[in-house]
Length: 96
Image 1 (spheres, rainbow, N blue to C red):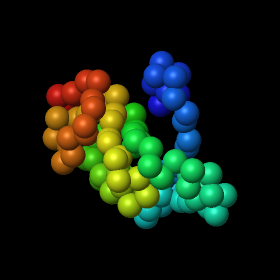
Image 2: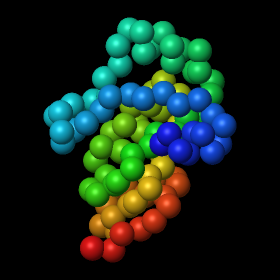
Image 3: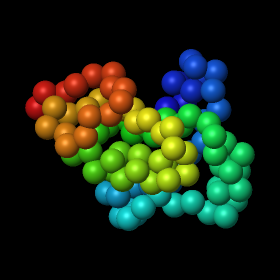
Image 4: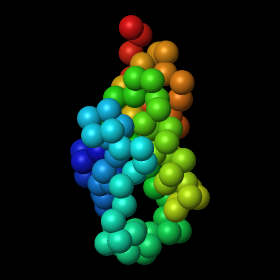
């Protein structure tokens, strides 16, 4: 995500959401997160996950961000072929 933001010359903001490591049920947004993100309401946003195996995390994350940013798109570095989600942008498909 950091390399992509640098390459595109765009701002990057991290939102905590880890269904498997931390068992989050939804993205964690503090009041300060919401205040900072409010300035970007009309911006196009890219929800990014480096590795999409089943697609659950990226799917929930993208839908959550669309509530705040209607123009949200999804992206990943690797999408496993059996994934239930097909991100808008994907660098590689992994055939396991």
